[in-house]
Length: 591
Image 1 (cartoon, rainbow, N blue to C red):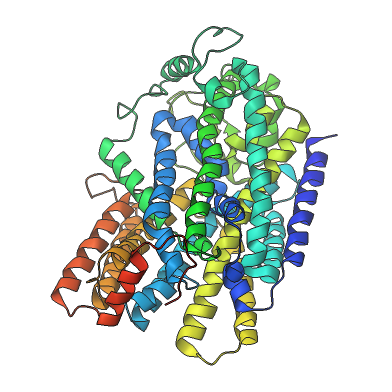
Image 2: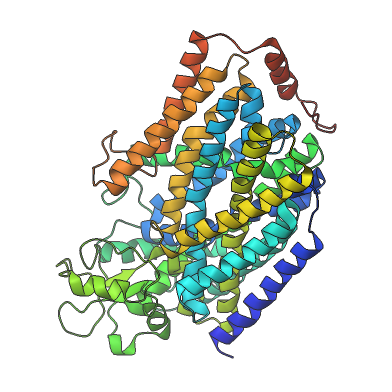
């Protein structure tokens, strides 16, 4: 059977599974809708958290970025995994002990302020919509290549699926769907990694194959990483394993991006809310351990996939006549995510450092986008004739390695599982921010369970439509967009959560001022450097790393303003003490 037929079969089976789970998990009360009734077993919550957190950026883009950036791409590995450790140790157990539904719930009660709650829910909505843009673009990429439909149609299909299982079951349906989605995405990631590792290095363990030797061909007997260094330098790139040298990111930017991703991970509302779904503080700690274990399986495999893809990609294209180009290239060429421009008219594909043409096209789902870009721009004279979008590397890797069609289809299903699992968690954050934090906690305290549940489902529908528009008109690369979301999360939530748990004197004016200052600075810098053409003006820190500076601004403003204004009420300080003092094995206490 063809790749497309296999894709229809496997994707169809997984979608039917997700909808079946959602129907079986449908809820009729707000506790089930927002926190799955608070009774999810720790191992199931660990699986769901891993799926919720490992988005399209982790599945689709991270290995692609490492493949092209080499050592510098490990920023994403270090930042995202390190941030999860911060979340598990510093925030998750204490927030679970607090026992509410959402992050704005904690901020509003801890800082005894409706204004603080409003600022927090605005930050939650802004971060979630920024993040969901990357997920819907991931859905569009998969559909455009593997299911033979345009991106708009693919995004609409994804919107319908995620609305049905999110709206029916709320957090309960999302949780058990994400358990299934983790199983799908991890199999889709690991199976081709094992197969490709066997083909290149002879090792069935990708992590060992990545550090092993090439089994056959002109590089047989040489270490794979040594070979990649030579390939890169021969093509004019920095050595694959080099750090902070020519062609690599400066050390200050690497540090800023890593800190930003760490703090952003610990401040992501859709991940934090997962720890409200377990029955106890002890359950929160255990589920955090499981989640880190399940996340580690994918994250230790990603560098190996990146290295294998780099090796196969260059070997299959560079110096080859276009007339004999492998079928995978022409398949992806139709999506506009890879392109070749014959600068010297010799019909041979040449891959070198640098862009083949000025600028970088924004892929909107129209297959002619990149072709129009090539027509309307004079090619550069740097010798590079190939354009390859980093987002396709994981999806194209099985085709590049000539794996069976069912493996290619499984990877497509895995990419959809990663994008949809995170999208559903983000959509619930948006819906709960409006229906619970805004409507119930501020506007109408007398709202019935039925009214709150109905509004929550309506808001999921509204959020799905807006997210779909982001998928059709994406603002950038999946991992880059997600990195910006992490910047906004690190500069808004992480400082006020950290201080709210560990510093009794953090007060209402400090928290409000800190969130506005931190997120305002970060957002302004991103707009200036991303959309207004300004060069990075703060020590050369890129917009993807500026959230670390925004976090420091937030911390400083919160501390200074808190010290200059009245301390929190005694009842709030007592609440902080009771939340912080570990009574880990018992059931969580609501305050």
